[in-house]
Length: 610
Image 1 (cartoon, rainbow, N blue to C red):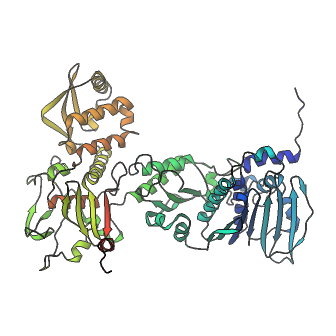
Image 2 (cartoon, rainbow, N blue to C red):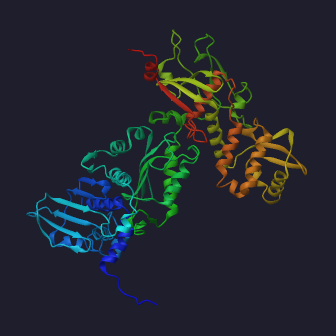
């Protein structure tokens, strides 16, 4: 066996560099974090050949004293922590004392710095393990660090670097992360002598717009929630502004960019009901909490953290985002009072459309009170009349002017306005104060039914509707076996979902009851879908982790189908229910349920004013 020996300091630093400095972008991250920890308000970055040839970071921070310059390039020397207590409550971005020493060990590094009150700056340089003596230099207050020829003394490692454009792309992404996290700091990025990005000090929303584009801000919702010493703030994009990759996802914990599985899972869960298939949400979110409740000393790169109570953090983030995404369609601050007064389950008068041909809005004449005892055709099928529960609609009265128009106050009262007609039995057209609203009636009603089913299951009030004549159907062995297993093990699973399914023979099942809200759906198809999920995932998983997928399937069966002709009151009732339903801007699969076409857009189409 070989003799155990101490490794030389240079080799130790190069081993550490393998963890800290994976590529030029890793070195740039450490240099920028040092500038921020020094209190800089203006940082300039200059790169040559993607940062491989040279990276230069200039800041106006507090600077480094002459006697500390040598220590700055020494491993495990830092001004940011001095004890275990400091390590457990780190508030700075850097603290390990490894970054500069690791970078210097694999490059040609030059460090110039001047503190306020000093007559001049001081300079120190290193080439691998060789460190020069300090000498006077000319510089304003602040620090300039120049890293050249990265990996010049470890050629095997340099071979792993990618092309110049690839390495610059990683550096630019690192610069972007810093720019998003500190809108109070001005930053500039140059590459090969050309200025590419320049961000002045700005409010967070403006900085987000400058970095990620104005479309991101326009399609995002502000988030700001606090509870039990935790705060989550930032912007989360609407589900319709989704991406095919995770390239617009930024999460910061106490100002530090992190990739954390707990946070990522909470965000995915918050978006799961409204995001389409394999698309990814976009967001810039900042989590603030007591530094003692999070361990940032998990990995040398400091992009991983560990929470003392990860479940509490998960719940907090999920509920904060879930609340932001749950705002009903078109509801603004001005609408919240009107929203609170609207009870979608109480019987209220509704107005019929005028019979004068062109006038399609409700008038104050011919009022009809729609209730469970006074059905109005397909309206019962559309909104699922439940036992002992009246069908509901919102008041739709509008003041009609002599020329047949509807007064603006009436239109302004409801975000989605009033229905004017239907296109090919698929889309509902409505007029609101902004212009034209186009609604996909199946997608919208699917969301409404889905939210009602979730609420009913959560409150254990999924009412069962016995069928006058049970519906029997030929079933395969797996379907019969699934019913046998459920009936033998936990019959309440089917009952909780509102079903009563019996075995008539080895190859025949009978549906004796279905959920009241789904009484007009195809009982056989509905039962087969439920049994398929029970067979594949088991009764316990269906009511827990697979619950939303199953309810989404049930809601799809209950939703109004395309090519169905609706009356104006039925269309208006759908619009009112959309306004009162959480997340009604998207269906269960993440598709949009409605679009707004403004008057300006319509004028542009018809070249009005030109």
